[in-house]
Image (cartoon, rainbow, N blue to C red; front, side, top):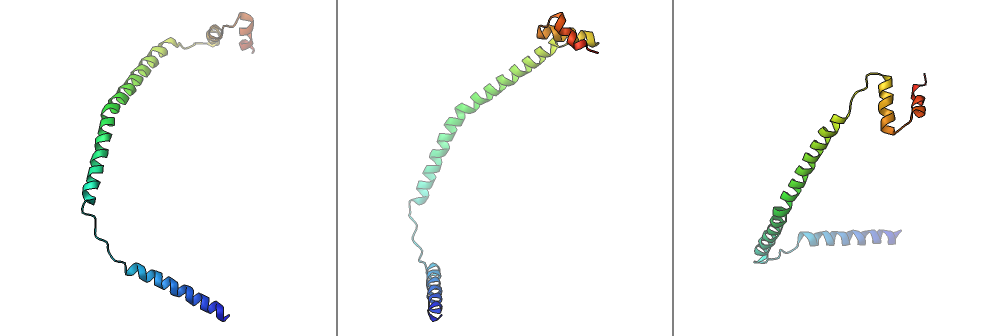
Length: 112
């Protein structure tokens, strides 16, 4: 029992010493060229990004514009091919012509 108390006290003492070391830290002098190096790296990264963005953004924009125009043309061109059926017989004729069915197979649709 006594040894457990001593162990706890030793652990607590070590913890206090460690925490005291954080409070008594000495400040290090900054490197005089640190700010210059950071600025140089930031400038290099911004130059590299501007070169890539300068070429790729217009390419992606033109591709997107082309896709939109192609979709617009395809949509309005294909919508003219569809006609509405007025009754069941016309609908069966449209379906049989689209599916290449003969008259015997189209009679399946007329099952009443």
